Image (tube, rainbow, N blue to C red; front, top):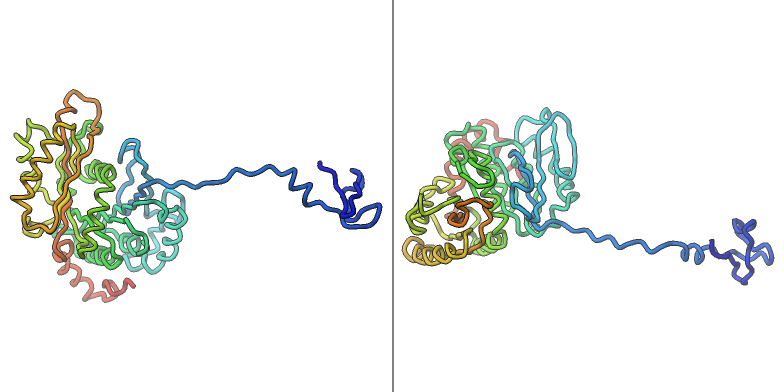
Amino acid sequence: MSTIKCINGHEESDSTALHLKCSTCGAALQYKDPCLQQLKTLPKVELTFEKVSMVFVGVPTPPGSALAEDKDVFTSSILLGENEMEKVESFTLRRADATSWLDFYSKYLSKLGRWMKFIGLDRSHYRFLIVDTRKSLSVLALAAIQQSWKNTIVLAITADQTSTLIEQNTSFVAIGTALKQGLPVIAVSTSYVEELIFYTERGGLVVRAQALIPILSLLVSGVDSVMDMMGNDSRLGIKEHCLSAILSASEKVYPSVENALSAQESSFSIEAKKADVVTACLLAFAPIDIRNRIEKAFAKYRRQDLKDAISADHEGYPRDGGATLFSSSLYDLLMIYGLKEGLTYESLKKGYDSIASKVPELSLEKVV
């Protein structure tokens, strides 16, 4: 221990050092400076947050490594369970607490907003919400996102004519909530997900909701371009989008890249036509020689098939499909389309009205 002195400079012995006054002159003893000398400088704490945060709502959360190898991604989920529980990686609500989206929205909005802040969702550079809008948690999750959190995209599994009326009502309100929040939406319909099937070198054959994972991986890999497109579209008032994807394409399946670009038009993720497209962005993942061919093919495709679009861009990336014999000849195409207003929810309005007319509380107006 450092020597303890009074304000007049008298030193205190170990036996008297715990007194408040000097045993020689009665002046106050100085403890602060000697104590501070004994304290070591604490290391500076610097918090780091992942570049991309993904929140899964009503959708199984895949392992982080399944989304993008060696990518800076944080995943969390909003779930239903037997007991309410808050963790860094999940927020669980009691299944018995509610019977509709309005019940969850009314009870948990503030609490979920605090959890989102607690896990640092606002601190990531980019955010994706992967939301099954048919589920009762969807409205709550979308309403809890702060409008000030820029660079946030909703990948929405939407109800369609195969869904129940209550699912259509919930989906309509969830999409409406996202758009009211200013969040751009990429919509994939229930039927599209049910029929989805891809082959990937790492995962083999993946179907239905599991087939969304390689799409999400491509979105993460091209996140800067995706966010740029969404930002540009938002400035034009375009918030609604769909996508089409072709994975592990090769000349054995498509004689040329031009054929592949034409083929992807038949796999829009919602009921939409080429005439409904107002913007387009192609993300191409391929070896360099194939990327050069894709660039030329897209320039031609843009002139001929997207000539009425406000904008149509493309970005090429290296492809990491795994070390297989045929990897060097394969490529992935992910096209994101900006759509005319209303296409993501107009087909749900009849089902929405059917429920809202009987139970007025289950209307979009109840979401503040």
